[in-house]
Image 1: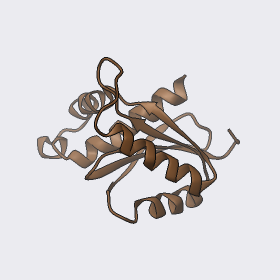
Image 2 (image 1 turned 90 degrees about the vertical axis):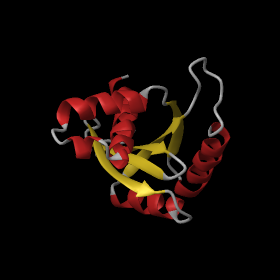
Image 3 (image 1 turned 60 degrees about the vertical axis):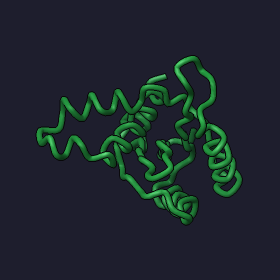
Amino acid sequence: MVEGTRVLAIDYGTKRIGLALSDPMKILAIPFDTWENRGDLVEKILTLINEKNVDKVLVGYPLNGDGSKTVLSDVIEKFAASLRGRSGVDVELVDERYSSSIASERIISSVAKKSKRRDKGLVDKFAAAVLLEEFLNS
């Protein structure tokens, strides 16, 4: 990885995707945003990669508890391949088992308002941050 560049983590869902970015020193995992999953998704991500100087993308890869593929696994493999082919950056699939549960626990402990805790978009970007944090700490 190049110094001064960032890592982008994506928690992919059929309705929304959560995004998290590292700082340029690749120490912190920062929940960034939640986007609707629409037809222009790859283009929006390519723009973000360029704007934020991203050199690596992590895409959460859903697996069952026993490690077998889920119904979304093939969709995410195709999404990651498309991103890899069009971005020119390293795109890696990472096990996302339990990331949403961990994100929900963190939100409950850090967000005061109950109505804000139920915001699914918040869970999505925090789940992406969990993926990124695990990568940065490995």
